[in-house]
Image 1: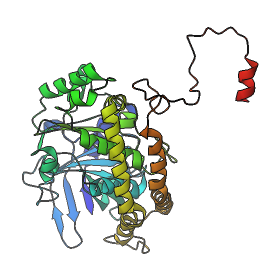
Image 2: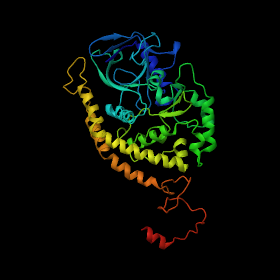
Image 3: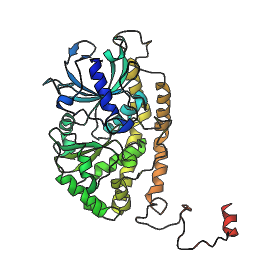
Image 4: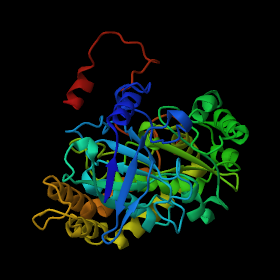
Length: 430
């Protein structure tokens, strides 16, 4: 349980920062690095582990979020960013790993299930992802010290994460960026670097070289080879296949959103999964189902246009399907999360035996169960359509192995329109 003692003045400033962040209704990105006099904070953060209560003292706290964001009022549930040691040195949420940054997510899009579910799948596949847990949250802004609200605590991509996954990054992280709407391009490096998440600032020399290589070789055979000195292609192909398998469409590959890019100490850049609450048809009335494997971001389309990268991705996705099928998400990870929620008894009050389960969670559970019970079979059928690319499966131009496909609706500019209806063609179409 996290319980916040926050002054009205600080809450007002947090809300003002969010409303006037320059991102409109989206609010700021998932950062808590406004250091110094501009930092907003709780006067005290009390953390209860079921046995002991720790007073963390003054803890940097911010109201953050995009589509699920809201201000912090007596009747609203915001997303909260935390930095445990901005004001008090040596304070950590996990002293074993020196975890000092976290997000308390209100989970209003994908419920309490979506985000931990997707990250658990990535983790099981050997991909470095943030840790998650469930927590009750209370505090003075809600004007009732008996109110406790279920949240998901999600680790943030910071130095503690990099140290915990040093092998994945070739020793650690040199730079971390988090942003949305800008793709990898030399013209965008300055804008990307405005969202540096590394204490002390980020260096951009190698990012500029990488982005220039992308610009010079995009949509050409050999794109993978031309960027391989900068980009961890096996990791990205795995990330792309997992995103397609789980249908986490609000990401870099498919929506240029929730982008986290980490430059490892080995000099390679890696795209990390972030804000994965929308998956398996969860969130926004089943958003992002029917999502294409390739998406429309530069690294994904660049791979699609490169025959070598294309076939390597198909092979990676075949392996991903096999491994996730063996994992049996619907009958292992998913019920495990449900059991954790149900077992999370409130520190006080009567929860009726349901723990953190909320009224929509049963429906979200059923949606996710149905999706993952059928996903392996459906994914294999989808992947089969990509195995031998044709103008249908690679509609952007690129390379072509031949073969015919249905009319795409494109205008044939080579044959002028005479205005005369071809009745034979019309009959065939009807």
